[in-house]
Amino acid sequence: PILRMQMPELLQINKLSAGYGPLRVLHEIDLSVKEGERIGLVGLNGHGKTTLFRAITHMTGWQQGSIKLDGEEIGGSRSLGAGRRTAGLVKKGIGVAPQGDAIFPGLSVRKHLECGAHTKSAWRNRRERIEEIFEVFPPLRNLQHSLVGKLSGGERRMVSVGRMLMSEARLYLIDEPSLGLAPKISQRVMEALWALPVSGAMIIAEQNISLLTGRADRILGMHAGRMRGDIGH
Image 1 (cartoon, rainbow, N blue to C red):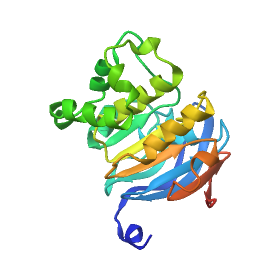
Image 2 (spheres, rainbow, N blue to C red; image 1 turned 180 degrees about the horizontal axis):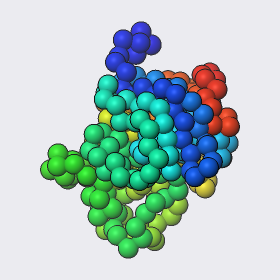
Image 3 (cartoon, rainbow, N blue to C red; image 1 turned 180 degrees about the vertical axis):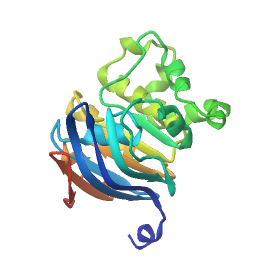
Image 4 (cartoon, rainbow, N blue to C red; image 1 turned 90 degrees about the horizontal axis):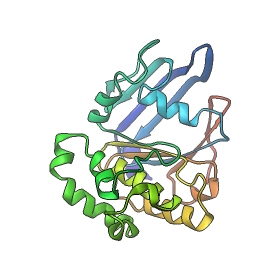
């Protein structure tokens, strides 16, 4: 914990509000994430977890407030053009595993993983990176030439998370990794996430707090679009 306190802040969010059309979902969110931290974000559906991730990546309908990544402002006021800056933010070091599978059913596992190598360096290192992902998710090695659309729910989730890891990001945003999975499969996916050698930081949005307890450095709660603060372990 002492070393973590000394680590620099990777993500700083101040007074972030965001929504879609006339609907305000986030209300002046403040959040600071240090390099190396793994944070759990809990809350019921509809209370803002996914919208927070979408705001960080400029995918909301509108937003205002400050978002800094490695000290660089990537937020600010925006009312139009959701997604226009998202590709640039990926190149700056943000990786996202969205809620659900978000797959291309007709691609093989290996092709799917290669799609995640967005940057030049990630593409150069894609073969080594894929081998690392097979170490994290061993079932994918034997399935690498199988079509993703024919995999089980747990296997598809592994592919989705693996594709995110191909980006060699500084900040990983993982939305509801256990959603729709059997308890044993959920546990397996989460154990793999906690074991990942991440040099930056990771935020995992999850409804099941038991999957975060004892593993996350901090567990933060969200309710009605507002941060409830650290809710302990």
